[in-house]
Amino acid sequence: MDWFNIVECLRETVLSVASNVGAFQGFKDPEIRLAEERFGDLQVNGVISFAKKAGMNPKILAEKLTDAFIRSDHQRYFAVEVSGPGFINFRMTSNFFINWISNNSDANKIQATASNLFKGKKIVIDYSSPNTAKQMHVGHLRSMIIGESIQRMFKFCGADVVRDNHIGDWGTQFGILLAEIKIGKINLSNLPSEEVLDLLEAIYRNGNEKAKNDSSFLERARNELVKLQAGDKENLAIWEQINRVSYQAFDDIYREMNVEFDYVLGESFYRDKVDRVYGELEESGIAEHNDGALVVFHREHERFRKQPFIIRKSDGASNYATTDLATVLYRSETFDADELIYVTDGRQQDHFNQLFRTISKWFGHFDRKIPELRHVWFGTVLGENSKAIKTRSGEAIKLKQLLDEAKRRAYDVVSEKSPDLSEEEKRKVARAVGLGAVKYADLSQNRTHDYVFSWDKMLSFDGNTAPYLLYALARIYAIFRKIKNKAILNEAVMTQLTTKEEHFLCRKIVMFPVMLAQAIDDLRPHLLCNYLYELASEFSAFYNLNRVIDEDSEVFGRRMIICSRALDILKIGLELLGLEPLEKM
Ligand code: ARG
Image 1 (cartoon, rainbow, N blue to C red):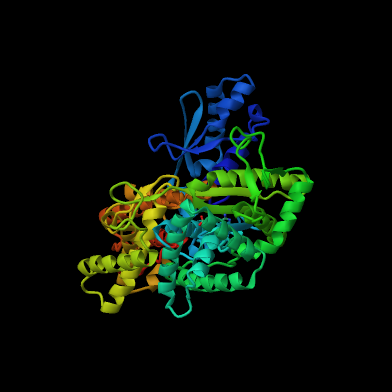
Image 2: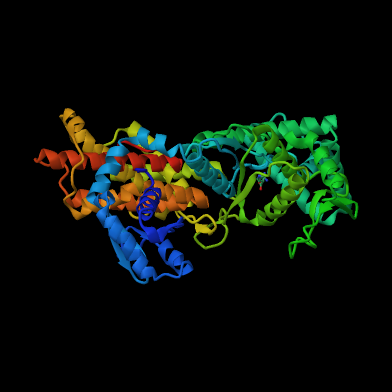
């Protein structure tokens, strides 16, 4: 039996029981769902559709299966009951928990089993991917945080993950910047990096305004971009300088957020790879000329039939679409990727829709393996007034300042809550809590929704927050610290549960692989967050009502095992979200 993912485990069990019942010949899919709590833990729905197809009475058929189940050895692990027209409900028994918990005996074992899930699968994840010449602001949070968590989940489940930061260093912003810098003879060399970025943002804002009314300036900007893309020395030198400063600022943020990449192949990396894109798309007839530009129409789509995917502009410059096409080809050929995942905001849905359609036609035409392509998009971060979050003066909030504020606020909260910690400990905890709070506030929302950024909410110790979960974990660590005679822990064995709270906590614990699989399937980390919050709440109920350090050595041993499994899973879960678990706070 698969003592890991209980859905898989029950599938195997049901199929094995059914194979001994004549009426179930050809029964392949039990259709297992999580059940509503009042009905059971899991529900098998597939008997109804199977019976209908075979012209049998579903309820009678379901009863045949449950009779056979009850006569088998499996009844030790599940209590079973038919309900309604032929649904079968299963409830895990104490024996099931004993076996699951003994089989998944520590964090390493859990990790080892999980890593079979995506073994051999190569996945490239494109996330964070900011544009240069700008500081990161609050709008850059989500891609970084969500992407980081998703890549951690895939890695944990054994996938071969390539983390690629696709920096926007080749786009139209450079036309305007170069024109302004050259016209104004602006020298960037003698300024500290922070000021360079501030200055560049101001230059860009100015230039952008100018371009709206001044067609000769706009023309100049376009020209500068074409010159840059053609390798003009002067433009390249300015461009390099701008990028160098930008990369330094990005790296500071990544270090702070504990985000790392395997590759940082900016858009410019693909500049010598775009001719092949033009060539192949023209040759195959997928792209066509339209007003001087090279475009792809998708005739099968309502809007994209008329709204073209522009892959080369009429002035000859490449654009966002061109580099993305070249990037998919590169990732397919270089990494032999099975799947490509892009994490960006929801406004890019059309871009990726057109990109993916183009890829499938293009790769199809040349008989290339078409990787699975997924756009993981997200909503906007809102201020407490429910509008996109801004500073008081209406600018985007710089990420560096926001993270500093998170640590400062967390320090105050931690000092109040745990005055006895040393200064050094307080700082360490404040860092984990502050940055964790920012990450968790984002991850715990369904990503396709907007969410309101609220310091008070995210730093609260009540509710579905980072402080609550970090604290719950630290509390379990504290239980272990209290035990003087550690040898006793080695002798502990898992025995029959005696209380309702033990049962509910174990039930949550064994659900971990199911919830993790679901979060990965949907690429929605909030499903994991919700699960961890429920786990921590069950733990709290258990700990408040059940004596863990009991005189009865059997009870004591069993409860310590349960605590230790709750600890493992909470810790693994927090790490999968990119939070820093603490042993003490
Ligand atoms: N640089 C883009 C932006 O800031 C995001 C890039 C996402 N990745 C990609 N391959 N298109 O919106």
